[in-house]
Length: 564
Image (tube, rainbow, N blue to C red; front, side):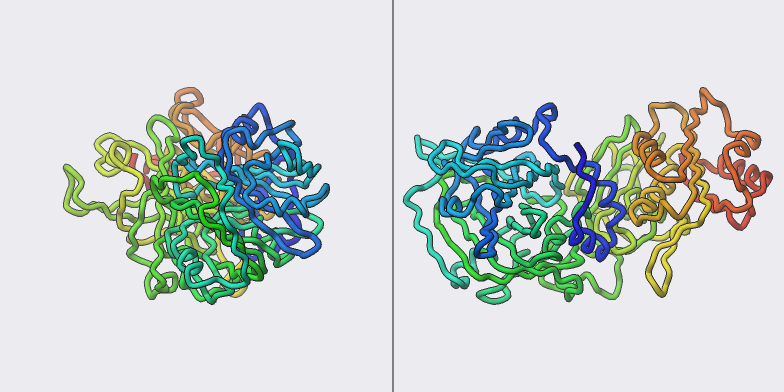
């Protein structure tokens, strides 16, 4: 069953970050139970490592406990209850305060496959002498964004050794020692637990390059908050309540530092963190360091391609945004002839949905020493506030040197040069005084082929910035065949979710050309429409003439040219 609401702290964080629209759409993915049909039980049962957040209500402290065990130590007894074996809990002291009703959160994570599942709820029982000593009653299940997971392969304890080192000695103190501080600075992964009274606990993950966690003082650390899914589970809890727990695990030695204290989100940070729009500052009240607590080890395979550089230099507020090195982080096959390429840049850039990016490619076989190309940025959730993740959706074309090279040779991690972002093909504007985005009351989007990308970006931007109640959208897309359609299910979903969104797809070999008469039948209130047309040159000329003929003012018609 979907869980569609956010608590007040999450809504506050979403409003501050400008992601309320994106979060509202993603809420559909929240569930009140596990799904055995989707393999949630199988995923949990396979994990030898997970993270549990628990709340000591009496001392008002939050603790994050890594779970080191073997497959089967996490077991979904039902779709509403998970059993956690005491054999994988390194600090059994937490069982002293885990009583029925205590908030719990479990983060099951597969570091090798970059998968994480977040399960929030409360303790149903605390049977200290039983094989499964903690039972988590599920209130909310959410698969989480995998972007910043640094990929590792677990090397399980061997030679009959248990996962947990029973002889490991824990040291408790209130401040980081010199050696602790070195430990912190070397980490590339952080686990954070947070808690909102009356709502529950949450476990989350943060990743980056070594050095992304900074020691401010022996009793304070901080780290950047990179672009996530926009729901703000952690920051939302911290907006409501500042108690949190942080744990660091050294995957090379099996040692850990667990900390509890207070955390705040700094929304106006000084810009020293590349690719981040805010930071979290964590003040330590107590910590426990345990060396070689587990006999498991992990081999790092690679860092996340989304991790920004860590230099300690302010590059988010440099004098010029361009050029920048853009690193390819993800490739998605949309269909047989179209792929989406996701690039990450170190400095956040603001842009409007529908604008295009210009890239420089060097020394491509068969080309000039420098080849420059432009593509519309097709994904736009954080664009107005600044983003360092840029998507382009590229169609393979006959004799297309760069487009075909991207399709055939582009590899994750490759670098190209981003020269700039420009373009007037956007219906969204930002008020200079209020910085609030606006959109025309009547919006007509016409496209053919890959010309759908700027119009798709505008539709996504309207949802991302919660503008769907302020515009009436008519979107008409023409494609040669059904096999060439992209984002069809997404657009159909949005047409049902947005209050005024009429979406029509025409397949040219079946439905013929879009005539003036058929256009007049699809477009109401022609005199009020702001029309955006993108596709082959002849298509744009024909559609412009038809729109003028049916009464759309020529000054309210905008076009963008693509080569097919």
